[in-house]
Amino acid sequence: MKILVVDDEHDIKTLFEQRFRREIRNGELIFDFAHSGEEALTYLEDHFSEIVLILSDINMPGMSGIELLKRIRTARPSAPPTVMMITAYNDDENFNQAKKYGADDFLTKPIDFANLKQKLTHSL
Image (tube, rainbow, N blue to C red):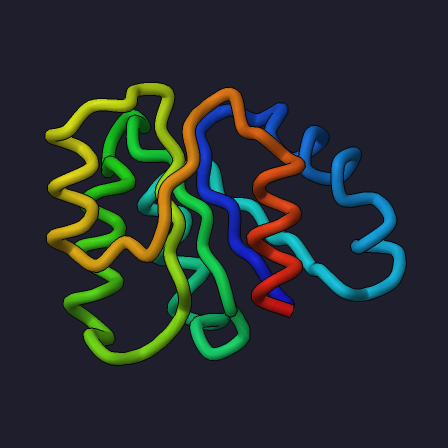
């Protein structure tokens, strides 16, 4: 399963690689990383059909995760991938906007990796 993680925090890559070391080594999960919504859109232009899941932070400088979600769903309204939104805030406005634009699931920061692994296991 190929996953694109979109987050402006650069240490997120190391964190995911540590937490999913076994799954990466076994070839079960492949992670790519983008550090902005704009970078994610550029990446998706060439790799959209490869990505099964997008994990996107909501609050990023420049293009927010909500705007990224909106642009993904506008460009390909009925196509995968699954999009999970990640936020440090558990507020109704972000939740409602993300649901409106087609978010499939939500995670809060700090990420509960045991919960995320369980969700991914059900997707494999």
